[in-house]
Length: 154
Image (cartoon, rainbow, N blue to C red; front, side, top):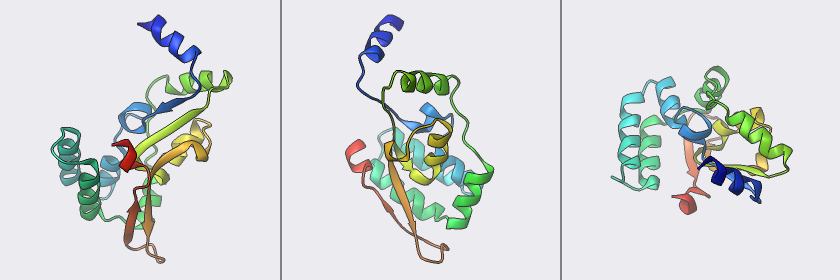
């Protein structure tokens, strides 16, 4: 199997990685929920969605209506609770980059949470495809989520 993987990577034009529980050890929305004090409700919905009990879009909408973070909470979460990279993923991505193979991060999670991970891995922001949280001008209430990519991914 290892030889097959090496052959595929050697001939790859690009490599796309999922982020939550793949590039990082955590599920970003679950950790944001823990930070905001709503972990139990959110993780139950995450498990239901991952088990096929509802669509990704339904699950995301329900989780965000429960979570309803402010811009300040999201910024503080990103600043104080950095994600944990999966062991050796940084080495794999660096190897791909040395071989000039473009690397993309594609996620049903949130771009604002994924961007620091991309920076740590030297992945361009333009190679990150994820949902975007949009807040009212004062940042106190979540306006909506731009699900530009998740409709195609899940």
